[in-house]
Length: 315
Image: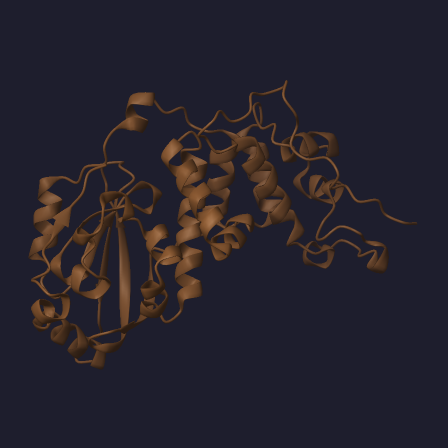
C-alpha cells in the first residue's frame, strides 16, 4: 500500500492564534519547523517500528507514528506541529520530547516555543549592562582570556587577554561586537577558528535558544534577517533548527601572532537570573599553548598596536 506524505500542511493560518508582529520571530512557525525537523531525523527502526521501505515518502517518522509513540492522538499532534501549542500541557510536551528523543537543551527549547513566557516590554528594551564587580573580576584574570556575553550573542565586556586573542573589540562599533556577526561576516574569524564549522554551529544554536526564549525581540529578528541575507552558511544552519548547550570544551585557534593554540573553555551562567554568561579560556599547564598564551600576553602592545584594555559596552 502506498503511503501518502503528511508534510503538505504547514503552520495554521490566521485565526486560532495571532502570528508574529513585524520585527518579531514567528513563534508558531518556529514550533512547527522544530518539531518537523526533529521528527524527520528519526527512522522507524530507531524506535522499534516497521519500515515501509521504498513506499515511505516522508523523511523520518510519520506524524501518526510519532503521535502513537507519544501517546496522543494524531489530530492533536498535527495541531501542535502546525504551531498551535496554546493549550498543550507540560506532561504532553514531556511525552513528545521522549518520543522524539530530545536532548535536555532541545526539550527546554520545545517548552519555550510551545509555552512561551511573557516578558514585559520594559524588560525587553532594557540596556544590557555588566555589573561593575564583574568587570573588575575580568581585569583581575591575568593570563586568562575572558569575556561576558549576553542576549543575541552580544559581547558585553572583556579583559585584555580576550582582546589579544580575539582582536580588540573596543575598536568596533557597539553593534558589531556580536559573535554571530563576527563569525559569519568577518573572514579573519574564519582563519582564527581552526574548526570554524563547529564554532558557527554553536553560535546558531545559541541564537536558536535565544529566539525560543525571546521571540518578540526585534533586535534578534533583525540580526537573523541580516545574517540570512549576507551569509549562505548562516541561512543553512538556521534552517536546520538545531539547538544544543555547550558549556565547556576545547577550541583550536590559528592566531596571526603566536600561531596554533588549543584552549579549554568554560561557560559560567550568572546566578542572578540574567541572560549573561562569563566565558573563560585556559591552556593546559606547561603545554605549548600555555607558552603561546604567555607570549601573547607579552606581545599585546606590539601585536595590536596598543595595549588591549578591558572594556564593556551598552546598547
